[in-house]
Image 1 (cartoon, rainbow, N blue to C red):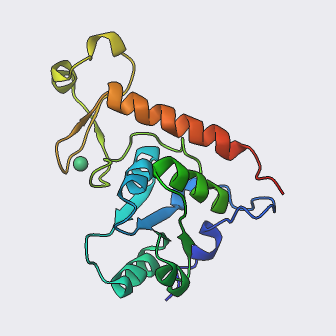
Image 2: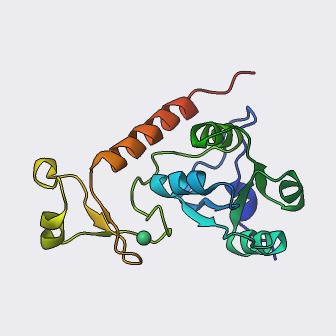
Length: 181
Ligand SMILES: [Zn+2]
């Protein structure tokens, strides 16, 4: 059965004014070709399921429907078969993300670094002792230090997080510019 909220979650960027601006419910499912895009969406805070290698298309479609996820794929046949999907074009994660921004209204700075980029789990705030053990902790007081409860990976404002923040910032600024007619 169709998720009743599903229809309004996919607000296509087709020049009409957005009627649905609550980004908090938007969830994605990426095919296995879109590993880096999936990680970027997770870094932005979006609940993103990443298909494992060889997972059948029919299962992906079922999962997307059941969980109300927008299916992102590079496969034309899969995009055509899925009810709510976006056929992703472009080469490299930036081009893929730009393409997605043109198709769907989303906020690349929705909830940065609240999910693990590797496994999609919600991050928890690190305790004082855990923060002290992270490299680069001292000069960055006041910024969030988080830990993934699933894989134990820690997130602190080091170079990797900064690079992703910069990328998300660029995407957010570019997405704010309306597409040319
Ligand atoms: Zn994790």
